[in-house]
Image (cartoon, rainbow, N blue to C red; front, side, top):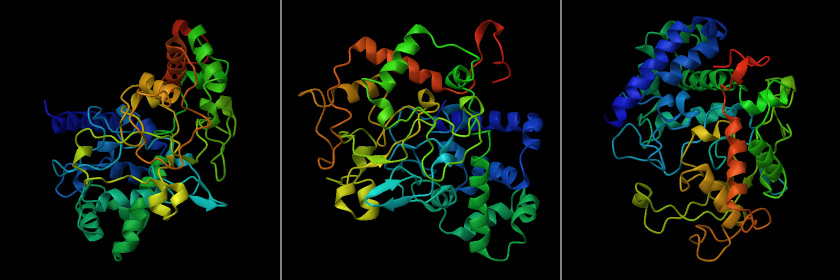
Length: 379
């Protein structure tokens, strides 16, 4: 079965779940429900066949289900983006992009080029390596031909101005991405924090390392700090207003080697991905990419902005051993490399495994075994 057939079957299954999960759907506002229709609509690409969910699928932590490729294929076969698709889940918690006193915080995409989720949602429709629409009018025409055009006009008004209708489309998608369908906070970590589950010995060991010698929590904050513009009150930490997202919302150059794997080897010869520096035109930001949140991280391989690392074990091993001669290729961008928090941490393989075990507790849908208190109903 080819990739498109697998995706079609998976999306059909999701649609059926959506139909029968009417109780959940009823909880969505008209704008959020419109956003859901738009998010899953494969007719909004040119040609038809790719939706937002194609690269941000619920079964893959709202990232790309094609785990065998480092980057995502667009609706045109053989056209690929240059980066690994980040998860759309929990993205709503990243604050609006700001660059103050030489510190970048928040924003969307790996390089922060979209200030917020609404701006992010405008990009893929018109990107030739994604949904490949020639212009906004093509997208709006497809919406006018859809079964939910009545809902669209209820939310956005009569379609008389293409730009206004396109903006309303993006706002609806962003609204859906802010719902608890994407931001569930039902992981084992959440239940442990709420006193409804317990970590295993290995998970506890991993948590101590994550917050201690491994230095993970220096960037992947594990204490509920939201940063600027956070959206409090949306669950996690047993009802705390500061849900734990495991990110500092900032940008770092981890010294990651260039990925020469197909299809990234089709990029222009000698091209270098400058990340944030390329967006800002600021050399001191070259090679820096946004710290992703770690929720559902086990569901979203491959990892890093270029999909270079295939397993969580490999990610932890890279952080642990990057600076040991002969183990890794040199950084793609040699300047601005973070040297304080990773490189030669001296962790054993067993300690790396414990950190991975802790990160596996970040996956939504956990139900405690044995019927112990309060954990039922998280599917």
